[in-house]
Amino acid sequence: MNFADYILPTNDIPVRALLPFLAASAGAYLLCRALYLTFWSPLARIPGPTLFCVVPETWHPTYLRGAYHETLAEWHRRYGPVVRTGPRTVSVTNYHLYRKLHSDPSIIRDVSFVSILQIDRPHLSSMSSSNPLHGLHRRLLNPAFSAPSVAEMEPLIYEAFVKYWDKAYTAQMAAQGTTHRTVKLNLLKMSHHITLGVILSVVMGISPARADFDPLFDDLAGTYESVIKTIVLRLFTGRFAYMYEAFGLSEGKRAYHRATAFIHREFTKRVAHCLVSSLGDASTAPSDRIDVVGKLATTLVGAAADNQTTLDEMVRELVPELFFMLAAGYDTAGNTLGFMFWQLFVHPGIHARAREELRSNYPDPNVSLSLHMIQTTLPYVEALVYETMRCFPSLPSRLLRILTGPGKAVGDYFIPSGTSIHTPIYSLHRNPDNWEEPDRFMPERFLGAKGELLKKQVYAFNMGAHHCIGRRVALSEMMLVAANVLLKYDLESVGSADPRRAIVTQANMRFDTPELWARVTLKPEIDLIS
Ligand code: HEM
Image (cartoon, rainbow, N blue to C red; front, top):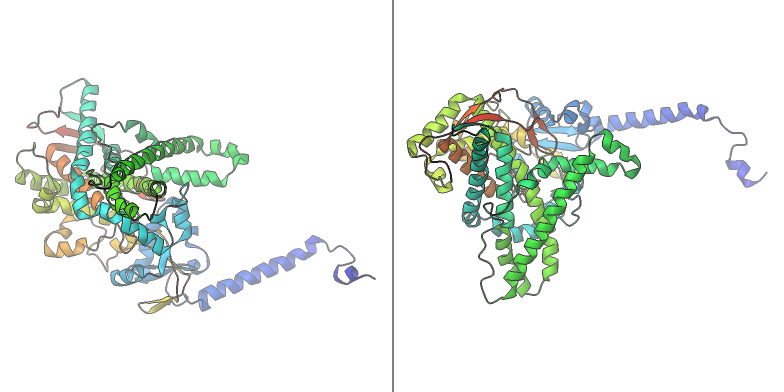
């Protein structure tokens, strides 16, 4: 007998005979795991739906339907401000605890969330899961988004609004071949055109009056969705190419690549050009451009003067950052504007009150309302924008974080290192502990001194180190569009006022169809925009 005879069976054991043993082992493992997760895990004390202690929350049926944020809000109503939503996931909706948790330096971006956004862009520092790297880049980018910078950019924002709103309106009039002032417009499409115009102008410094962005619109419609589709496509290699067709994804993939290639090329060209001209003569003012690239050039001249980094490195670093801003600021603001118009149709009283405020303050509709005028004289219009962001935060949940370090006490509970932390923005905004009648669309809650305090509780842009860098740009464009449209045009819903309209959430919150039709009438006092 040799050694092998001792350790190998002399006769083949039929696989079938092993099956009960394997099944019993797997069952025992799953049972032990379930018992551990339910009773002994460090998260076991935190309340939450029993089943989801054991299975990931992404298995919840509403997750696939794109309505998970509502489930999360419901769990918070049932179980309280700290809820365990998965085997290793926790969500917190008490503002005080949320702030405490999310401003802790030991909480970092979840790599899985980051990697989705880093598709094609492995060096995207603003989405980095490393807090020091992210902080370094925020320090570089922040000056371009400060209050004075964004105030300087206001003419660019206004130009994009005028171009895309008035252009669409006059084009429709021409198509009807009539001087009749009422035309039918898809307000959702218009909102997206304006926000893309704004983002291209303020970030890249392309004047919307001169550039023709139109070819981009179709390709970019739903940037996030294209990114998700591309990730799905990546999972299926060329071997399964037939599946692209089966799922109707190939056109989406081509459109996404066309659009990203175009923008990437344009960005690189423009960023390089701007930096070269800024750095050419260090003795002169680096840039008089009022867009983000111009502002960044100013900051970078200092760094280059110290010889810390070469021009090539700067361009390589900046291009993905600027590119990401396009994706981050386009759908988000466009969808929020769409939600606002829809709510005006659902609530005619609110629509009338906003118009009344505008028209009593500015009887001449030819006036161009600036942000300063809106903020100082139109509190209801401003409140309307805030209430839209409260009820329909464009990124409502799942911007996941991971807790690192030794763990953290949150309220009565201890959250161990490695726990996945939710950003339940929708739940924060819809929690009756935080808001009076949270499910009612009520702009007036933001009026007066109490309203000013409540505005600070609108977390549509999140808070802490990772909060939205484009917050001021987004607020400016949404207010400028809301006020100027309501002053100059009468809007009337065309079948869009259904309060139960379907809203879905995959990467961001939006309507299930890209349409929101309205009859739009230019005020008779206004001479058609030449
Ligand atoms: C209504 C419009 C917008 C909403 C609701 C929104 C929301 C958000 C939220 C919630 C985050 C934080 C993500 C996280 O916590 O992980 C974020 C990040 C970001 N947003 Fe926005 N955003 C909007 C518009 C914009 C605009 C107009 C820009 C660009 C000009 C922009 C650029 C960015 C960037 C670059 C980040 C990453 C910031 C970082 O981590 O350093 N966003 N946004």
